[in-house]
Length: 302
Image (cartoon, rainbow, N blue to C red; front, side, top):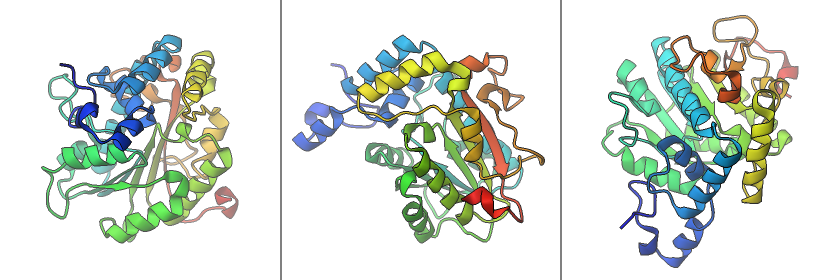
């Protein structure tokens, strides 16, 4: 008998009626997992939408893999540069043990703790299922330095950051590395997104690093328009943005290596990315990594 839910979660048929109703509605976090693990044990509602997106954008699974590898490479780079605190906004469902490539690390905290065993990591997601699954899959990481998983909505950034601070897991006396990867396209209201990011900019200590990936119609306009249409028909907001709008999300911060922000197709951001030669359309999204400087023009945070 085929399981009807993501690995580690119960069969939908065994759940209470309220939970079954929740699982009958497609979830952005679960749909993203289908693209990353091939849809093994996916719930039918999520598999249906994910497959319909693949019909209009056949490279969506490749784009998801490119984005995930970029996230792991970025986490490792920041850890190697001395960042010892990480905030993973929109962590989604973990893939621990569910990608078959030998020796491949799949999770941010695995990568970070390989480089810095005492690093602190806080994962956040708005999907309660993703939060529960992440907590269950990370129970082996115990002690004060183990990763923490928190339920929160990035569009309610002030409340979310208050909750993060209340955990006491991260210190605002030291820089924090923040990953916001393939999260902001799932919020359609431009003003809400800009306000949320401005709040994050103000909260972070000087020297903190902000990494964003964001799908863009500039790179794969026709394909992404089809994906957007399918997702909206399923009741899921999705908004690819032009490069100029994505650049605004960094609040005017300089690039991690100094100078103007470098915003490029995801696969081209790290020299060691295994799909570095992939076409920009396959990435279908831009990546940038910026650092909070000592001073900022206040206009950048409006």
